[in-house]
Length: 571
Ligand code: SRM
Ligand code: SF4
Image (cartoon, rainbow, N blue to C red; front, side):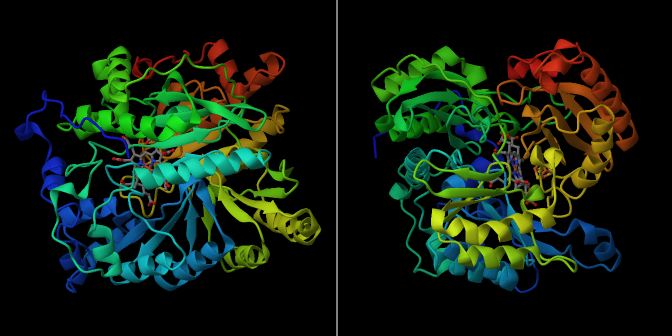
């Protein structure tokens, strides 16, 4: 591991730091009183401080918001439960791991699994007394949850790349090793969840992070042009593969992406990353560690709303950042190499890899996997996975790839996979849509998202068909609040929740993840959404240029301005 200059930004004296910073510093490297909280039989919750610390362990305390009123009337505490997120770099897992997760969901969760926009699994509805059992179960198949949440390096993403077998392997290994390199080292995780003997916290316990970890979450991803499925410019740090066929030449490095913002706070905005140079593959780890180290040392620790790396860059300037990076690295990045993206979407159905194996991408709306009274989807999926001899890849669009099916096995699986897809349903609109979790589990949701988007799409479809646009690809993404977990600000049509039944409507992104959208209508309900879209689709159908995407049209036709930099998002 390379040495990092860990000098702190002296412009932020300790006494001015926010409460989360003090909590981290005093937590004995994320131990806090989690062990005691877990044992407290009086409540289904943990203390407020432990709630914050447990995020670093990949665990979020929540309560079922559908039950809030009822429980309040009954004078009961909220229906506390936990969301548990798996650390799964690049979204790749084995059938054996899936089988275990499926079993754990039944035994300790709400019976379902949720595929996320960062290519991993979430369990919902886990009760406090089952947390240890769940995490120990994952350990049996080599999985953990550390740093899946918290102020640290989050799940590392990696393009799904069905065609490029050799390159995918190489990139997935880089994603996996980057995740391992930047994984917190504290013994708190194994002590708390695996019951290993407690060690005295010592100052050297976190050689990379130090006692206060990062000012805020930090996200890394690897993309392979022309497919921008991971939305590389929304990552704090992105590596854009530059290749000759399947030979990896190196990466363009992009810095400072992020989606999260708040309504009525113009200091916050989504921002797309800036490409700052090119590196050889052997320098990925040093660059990742050094960039994260600069954010650790200079990120705003006084104001969490201003603490993401994108704001550090805008506060200090890109030139300052590049100089600091070059100084710390001891070398300069080469000039960026040309690259082109042409889509953010997944390739559905069958694709053949360069190694001859087959891949099947299954569309799973919102990544939600559960059995219901009329369709035992989770069970049917598991039955197929058990027969599968390759690996599984979760896509950044919440779908699932049955990857590396040997040619001799394709015929056997084809009928079943295609039949399952038919039962799951979903057409063009759904293929281009993402919804975040939102209600009832997300504590920050202001409006429905996952539970509402399918209905809304059902009402949008006739509007498109009426204008002869039924086969047109248009990205539609919905988030239940402005945090943007579905990456709505890079969708041609983006919705973010404002209040129950009310959404902001954004237009104008480019289908390639290289242009932000912009607010078009604020705080509107379904009736107005459909009226607005009906007008827009009619105009688009009439006046679009050949091959002009909907987002490009809304900018050219003057509905919204093109946003070149995040700061223009709020203009
Ligand atoms: Fe997210 C917070 C769900 C991807 C930006 N996100 C949350 C929490 C944990 C709510 C909370 O803090 O109490 C949500 C849990 C809901 C639940 O009940 O499960 C939540 N985020 C999700 C997931 C599950 C959405 C999904 O439907 O797939 C995604 C899990 C990713 C993963 O596997 O790690 C998810 N979140 C994202 C993304 C997209 C991405 O990373 O590619 C973003 C935008 C990119 C970015 O980070 O800027 C995102 N989530 C946020 C934010 C805003 C951060 C900010 O800079 O302001 C929050 C709120 C916060 O951190 O304060 C948040
Ligand atoms: Fe929750 Fe908001 Fe993220 Fe949706 S966008 S999961 S509502 S935090």
